Length: 262
Image (tube, rainbow, N blue to C red; front, side, top):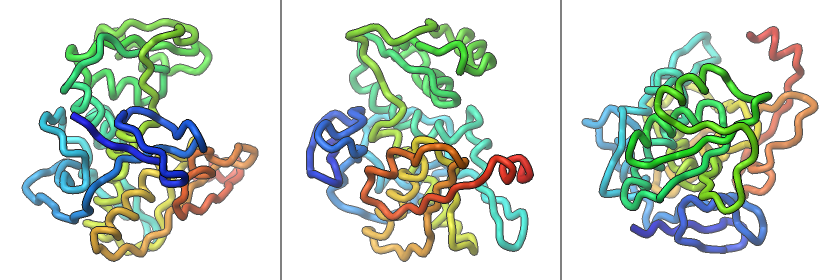
C-alpha cells in the first residue's frame, strides 16, 4: 500500500511514510491527504474514531489507544490524561498506526534507537509480527523499560546502530498521524481553554498537535486554540518547530518553575 508524504516547505514528495525528514530542507515530512473530511465515528472509543483524517489502512492494530479524558484541575487549567493509554504513554497513538502499516508488508527486521516510552510502546504493538532490535545508550535509558522489553523477547544492544540496519526513527510521518489525534479529541470535547501547552524537546508532539488543528480547519471545523511548546531555559529551540511551517509559539520556563509546579 502506498502512502504519499511531502514536505510543506519545498514540495519534496516520497512514498515512504517512515522517511523522517526532507533530504533537501530538513523539514519534517507529513502524510498527504487527498481530501479533509471531519467525520467522527461515535461508536469507536479510540483514536480511530477519526479514521476519515487518518491513513486508510486495511489492517488495524489497536489496543483502544486514544480517546483519553480531559480533567479540569482549576478554572483555567485542564489536563489531557495520556497516561490512560494502554502502555501509559501518548506514544501508543503512533505505535498503533506504525504497526498497522508494517503489518501489510513486514520487513525482515527493524532497528530501533531507544526512546523512552516510544520504544516499549512500539515493541508492544509489533508483538511477534515484526522482529525488532533495540539499541540503547546505557547512560540514558530507563531500566524498567529494559526489563519490559526483555520480557517481550526484544534483543537489546548497548551502542550505536550498526551500518546498513533498517532503522525506524521515532520522528516520522506516521508518528505525526497518530499524535495529531490528540488535537481532534480536544476539538471534539471542546474544553473552555484558549491555549494548548505541550512540553517539548524535539517539538514532535507540538508539531503533531498543530497539524491536527490545521487539518480540522481544512475540513471546515472552527479551531480557536493556540499551540504553545514549552522548553526549559538553557535548552535549544525544538528543531522540528524551527523547520515546520506551522504556527507554534515557544515559551521558556526556568528549572525553578518546573520544580515548583511538580
